[in-house]
Length: 291
Image (cartoon, rainbow, N blue to C red; front, side, top):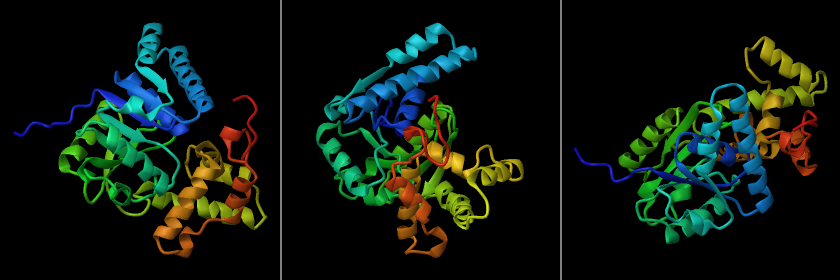
């Protein structure tokens, strides 16, 4: 049997926001040397505090002990220079949902990283094939879409682009299992599986709210009590980030050639323009004081 040339020992994470820091915390928890990068030092500092707090919560719940916390945190390095990731066996990009920015990042990575490094994008809606098209070694590129919060949610969509090699795909599936995640292999179609289905979950709720006959709290409660969801659509948008949700919705709408069922709602646009982005700004559909 042909030996897999890809061995994952250290992992680089690009983007220290909610998603990136969540992915990094999981990687370090499972024993991988993990570098987490962001252009903004204040975001890196916030990520460091958030990961420390997440480990403390596990300690308080007796899921880990003090020695585990120290060991896991030593596996993390917080950096503000992309060159620090050059020796990574795998780099997972969790930057903003903008294809031009993602392409720019990977184009630069290809000039500094090892030839056998795997590049993965955590995109939730942009074509994996389209992002990888600017690379010389397109076969090493794959989609690896975690769900928020990444340190809790088990599902990971592993997206095989048109150029992704079977070897890289298998390596990532195996890694997901080592991270105690549930990998699901997806085709490179607009929004993959979950986000395509979820557009109706958010979209119909926003339409109902926009009609003005019922408030967001009631809609959330109905969805939880009668629909069996752990969070209502507005709670979930606040958690994910209303800007992120809006960006994904626009991307899916465009990808499906403006099919009305994926159409964004003016409420989303108004909130994004007003800076009401959810938990990360301490106000979205709900107000957040002690976070």
